[in-house]
Image (cartoon, rainbow, N blue to C red; front, side, top):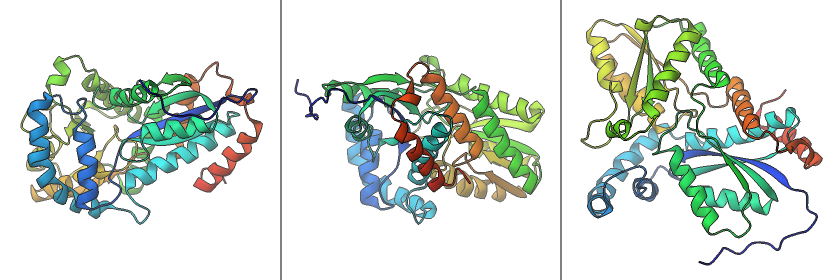
Amino acid sequence: MSFAPEPAFAHGTAAKTAVLICNLGTPDEATPKAVRRYLAEFLSDPRVVEIPRPLWLPILHGIILRTRPAKSARKYASIWMKEGSPLQVWTEKQALMLAGYLGQRGHPVLVRHAMRYGQPSVAAALDALRAAGAERVLVLPLYPQYAAATTASVGDAVAAWMQRSRNVPELRFVKHYHDDPGYIGALARRVSDHWMTHGRPDRLVLSFHGLPQRSLALGDPYHCECLKTGRLLAERLKLREDNVVVTFQSRFGKAEWLKPYTEPTLVALAKEGVGRVDVFCPGFVADCLETLEEIDQEARAAFLAAGGKEFGYIPCLNDQHEWIAALAGIALGHMAGWGSASDDPDELERSKQRARAAGAMT
């Protein structure tokens, strides 16, 4: 096995601590070519599609990658921001703000972001951190609820990078934080702020990303963790059980997925006479195609077409203060004992400057 070339080891260099936040990924552009490249990487991951490769790859390359990119590109174009993909914009800002929040607390660590599929890749981000002198790296996936298809896949990417690295840093990995009090508090604040402006709905629908039903039988804890997040959020908001509905979205293929499905549930609620719903996606910490297009456009249209009167979409946590503070708390809890505050005093001021640039401090 050959290892990637690395800078010569510099004796006496102060060790640095780093946090790498990782999200799913996004095409570089809202074009069929860019979407095809992204989908080819995403749907080739055996964690994502658990079908034997000899059966799946001909379907992927012979059918899906020939028909889906153009349609998906139009969807991406409908939610694209002037700065780029919403997921990329918000994740980059979260990294910038997290560095500032940690610096404020006396932990001037390096913070970078990566995408499991697309750019910047996990390997590229880890290479950059090693080049910056990071000897301790906390990998923090931006998936509050653990799933093999998401969280574990980030671990696969980190492991693949380690296999080709000579000087491997000390690594820690955050598995989940679906019941973290700070995270639940941030979700509750987001919902409460929305209601202060728009009033309360007849139903609050909490839509999580779906997984094949068989993942539950195979031992994936995702379904249970989603339900716990929903229960804790409802308790924090002091809502009755019949005011909250937990659903699952983004079904792909013909197999049975976790139920109830989001859009059919919304249609059923409308037909039952429920006039107003608010939909919130607690499992997504940054707005993206699945929230802005699938929920705020497609699900909205389906609910209203079925007779619903008002549809409220509650934005994801994005750059909300309570969320970044919670993320900082999660990171600090997992960095205990690393002594990050004393490694590089100059990084403290740089962290504060980055936070100010992101609007985290006044």
